[in-house]
Each structure stands twice: as C-alpha cells, then as structure tokens.
Length: 156
Image 1 (cartoon, rainbow, N blue to C red):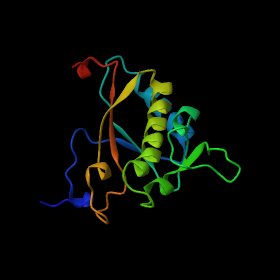
Image 2 (spheres, helix red, strand yellow):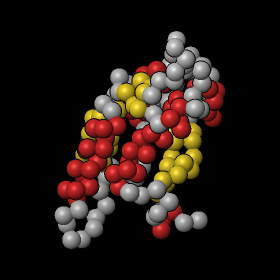
Image 3 (spheres, rainbow, N blue to C red):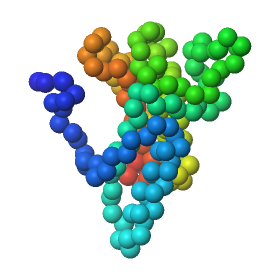
C-alpha cells in the first residue's frame, strides 16, 4: 500500500475552490466572501473549499493559547503573539512539546472560523507525529480533527 501523500486517495467531497492564506485575516476575508456568495441561493447546498497556509505564513495566537507554548519566550521575557508555520514543523523538539505550537495554530485557525461562521467547534481527534510518524516520512505536522458542536450530524 502506497503511503506517499501524492498517492493518497482523497476522502470526502473535493474542494471546489482553494484559497492561499498568509495569515488569519486573509482566511477570515476569504471565508466571509465564500459564505456570502453561497448564501445568496434560496436552496442550501454543501460547499467545500480549501484554505492553504504556506510554510512562511504567520499565525497570531491568543494569550490563552500562548500560555501552553513551550519556552518560546523572547530575550525580554515576553511570549510572542505570532507563530511562524515553518518553525512549528521543524523537528527541534519531540513528542508533546513539538505538538503544542501546532495545536496553538490549529486552535487559532478554528477560532477565526468560529468568528466568521458563528458556529462552535471542538477538537475531536489528533493524529500524525504524536502516534509515531517516522522521521523523514513527509508527515511534518500533526493532524487535528475539529467538529461542529452546533451540527445535528455530530450528536453522539
């Protein structure tokens, strides 16, 4: 079985549109525009879109999420309020310390989506490096699954 990301078969609906985001503000703008353009129809429809962040993207992190970050204090003792995506993918630390900045970015993205669509999301699952991705396997990041708490489809 081929595990190369280029050979993986996509699951679920394929995105109709892909947006390249450099920060959370562009994500919010693109998402707001996408929702606005799709809400003009009288009949609701499912729409899928992909929001891509490049490795040089900078994500602002709320103060609440900053407290969980591992020793990321600057020389003056303050905690940075922005994380570079590229830095969170480096394997300079292992285990849970490596995942903390990644979950901070993931939660920041989800918080931005919540501000735009007014639905509440919660983390359901994490997988990838935490569960033993091999060094050099191409899996540089941990995957997080967030589900909409307000959706009737997610009632357990």
